[in-house]
Length: 139
Figure 1 (cartoon, rainbow, N blue to C red):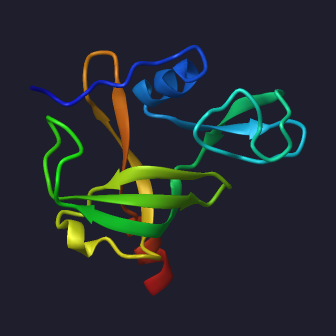
Figure 2 (cartoon, rainbow, N blue to C red):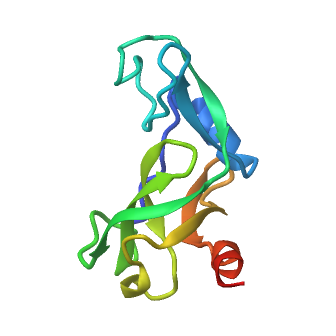
């Protein structure tokens, strides 16, 4: 049995369309400015229904991480690193981090988004170590 395929909804369709193009977008409330993820009918900060998707640079830091050794369902390869990512431009999201060895993913690690085709219709955002940032900070 294969891994479940995400099913876009009217609310999430713009996110999946952007991912397919290799772009990361996140919801931003036009009333209070809060960036949030996952898309909800109303802003979790002020409950306004007036929000839109905005581009994200897709760079951030690992806030929390766990290494998953027991697959959550069929089709998942284990072990894998599952992390809460604090994006530099405001949103926080949950994603896989592929650093080669899942044990190499640590809190504070700088990461950037990377996209991988999952099906012809769905492209998944993953995160990988942001070596560009490491080069900039060591020079």
